[in-house]
Structures are given as C-alpha cells and as structure tokens.
Image (cartoon, rainbow, N blue to C red):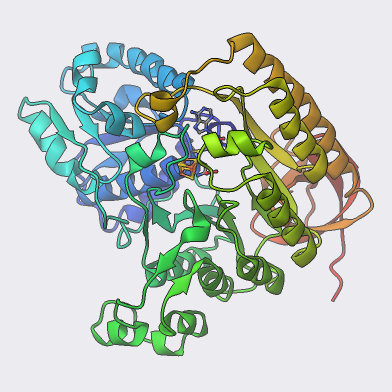
Length: 501
Ligand code: SAM
Ligand code: SF4
C-alpha cells in the first residue's frame, strides 16, 4: 500500500547533511560512506533511520550518492510481486559501481531479505549481505565479515526486538514531521499478506521510550509525529515492566520523569493504544499526532474518544477495508465482515464528526465474483473515502491464500475492477475536497509547494495537502489558518487569514 504513499525515493542530499551534523559529535568517523535506499511502507523508511543510526555509531557517514559509497544498502518490500521486481532492477544498476570499486559492500535489508534468506545470495551475485528486519544490530559485524571476504546473512526474527533504545538518525527529514515506530511485526495472518512471515511476531515498544523519542523530536523543532505499526490498535504494553518511577530511580530514563504528566498514565498498569495516544498528545498541544495503520477488527471506541478529546490528535484514520464483501473478507481472514466494518465507520462518524477516512482495497482476490466486487464499490459509496490505496491482488509465495486458493481472476478482470474503483475514488476524493471550500483549516507548514517557491504547502488536520501563498509572518514548522478557496482532487488551495485569539 504505502509504496504509493511514499513513492520509492532516494535520500535528499541536503537532509543527509543535517543528519550527519546531528551525529557528528558522537560518530567515530571511520572514513566509510553508507548509501541507503528504501522501498515499501513507512515502517521501512523508519527502519532505514535505525540502520543509519546503528552504522553512525560504528563511524559511517551517510551519502545520497551511491557512486561514492563504500556500503550500499537497499531496504526492500515484498508486499506485491512488482515491489520485488523493482528492487531486482535497481540492484542491476549497482553493478557498475561494484565493478569500479570491488571493495564495495552491497546489502539487501528488510522484507525481501527475510523472505528469500540465503537464496538471495545465489540469485543475485552482486549481493554480499542479507539482513532481516530484526537483525540490524548485527550489521557492523556482518560488514566486518564481508570485509574479511565472506558473504554474510542474518535473518533471525525476534520476539523482543523493538530497537527501543536506538535514537534514529532522521534521514531525508524536513525537520517537521517524523515517523516513530511503536510496534513491530504482525500476528494477524491475513491470507493474502506476506508481512507476518517477513516481519515476525507482533511486539509493542516500551511506551516510555516512545514518549521520550517524541518529546526529543518536539524539543528539536519537529511538530508532527506519525506513530507506526501494522495494527496500531493492538498496541499493548503490560505492567510487568518496572514503573517509570522505578526506572527513573534505576537511572534508565531521565530524572524528573516523576513529575511528567504525560508519563503518569503509564503507571496505572498496562498501556493500550488509546492510552499511548494520550501520552504522546500530552507532550505539547503544538505536537500533532498521527498514526497508521488501524485495523477494523481492533479499533475501539476508546481510541475514537481519545482522538476526539485532544485537538492535537489528528482527525484522520486509515482503516483498510480490503473488500466490501463478507465472503471475500472471510477468505482473506480479515476476521471482520461487512456489517462490522460499517459499524466501525458509523462509530467514527458519531464520535469524531469531522474525521477523514482513507482505506486500502484489493481487487480480484481469489474467486471474487462481479457481484462481490460490487459490494466493494457500494462500500465506497457508503463511506465516501477521502483517499484510497488500491491494488490488484498479487499472489505471494508462502501465504495462506497461495496455499489454499487459486489465483483465478484473470489479469484483465483484476485491472477492469481496479480501474472502476480508481475512477470511483477520484469522484469521492474530489467530493471531500470540495466540501472544505469556504472553511478555515489549521495547517502545519511543511515547506515550499512542489510547483512553486511562491507557495507553501502543509497538511490540514484531516491530512489534506493545502497550498497557499508564502508570507512574511509565517514559515515552515508553524501553524497557520488557511481559508480554502478552491480544490483539485488531491489539493486544497487558499489564503492565510489572521489567527483568532
Ligand atoms: N497492516 C496494514 C493493514 O492490515 O491494513 C497494511 C499492511 S500492507 C503493508 C498494506 C496493504 O497492502 C494492505 O492493506 C493491502 O491492501 C495491500 N496488500 C497486502 N498484500 C497484498 C497482496 N498480496 N496483493 C495486493 N495487495 C496487497
Ligand atoms: Fe498484513 Fe493483515 Fe498484518 Fe496488515 S494486518 S500486515 S494486511 S497480515
């Protein structure tokens, strides 16, 4: 899904510079340069920042130019076949760099590494290191092994690893929004999905380390955090761990924590996702909190009330439906049906009246009939999503669907259904955008718009991109009120109006 949200991108050199400056005091510069490129979901981009941090501690600098790199890492996605193909094509482009510099280390990280394991080394001769998502702490050792002339593989999955103590180097950052991983892995076993096999069992990260990371980001000028997990609603931290006070006494977390209002919630036993949202929201009213991804089976009214209670928890929920038909949802092992999903949509509309909703849809899943596809279309009519990521079903080796069901919908039928829902979504995106005309949106300025440096862009609370003229009295990282005058299907356009006291 999120390979559309964040198209495959190389890291921007100017932002790399910032990350290096941040790390300069601690790094024991070893004179070697790391180039890291990420594909797939936001979690992968977040993981690349953890990798950069681990290697910065070993003295690596990062570079945005792979031709000058000593180590090239490609952080991969397996979610659909075309995501894997893209990575293989990209690897071919690194061949010239390796011929020029035989000492160059080429590594494959992430989901494809985990899925293919040492087979990757046989299939792609260029590759020296294969590392799964739970083995990044081992990277310095693995690079040493390659320096000694061996190939290296570590694809061990862990039940505990959350990299909680690692402060990520922010790559490609605008200094305003950051991703923060709150959990890893997934226990859901949706039948189409490879993630439980590539990212292992679900585990939640210590809430105190999450709050500490978000607070640090805020103190460094960041104004928006997106809490990441495959199913954030099943976030759970039990009270078996020592309380914040005990840990402060042990010197594990900063002194003064006992007086920290946002941490007190963590002391009353377990922390669920609603509690965590609240803990992060309490850091500062000027820190916006977003999250992804919610799961329809787990999103509770408690979470919805928490969103409604705090102005700085954004009114935006990504709630993947996958299909609007109950039989297909059952085959997908999503563990909810059409009625349940509609019940959750109704709860969102009731508890958070002005909430944007986006979704993921798969067309042409095994045995899906035209009638069943129409149920997906009618779900889109019911919800009128603000935004959707839409995909043709792609069979993934090893998944439950690949084992149990035939991938029997012809490619042209999958495509026809996809084209139909894409057109439908265009209509509803435009409808949602048009509904904002005449309203005033609170926008966090992110920078110049892509098209013109006479305009700024930023996101509204509901996650819509807003464009408005640059002005002397405001700059990126600040909030402004924008009166919306017109829209396209993807963008709101308006002008800044004075803040009301
Ligand atoms: N954990 C999230 C959830 O359950 O909604 C999303 C995980 S996945 C990285 C993102 C999206 O990719 C899914 O919501 C689904 O729509 C899509 N996806 C996953 N496996 C797929 C497959 N085999 N073929 C097509 N799309 C797929
Ligand atoms: Fe995949 Fe389902 Fe887990 Fe999402 S919830 S990552 S779709 S198995």
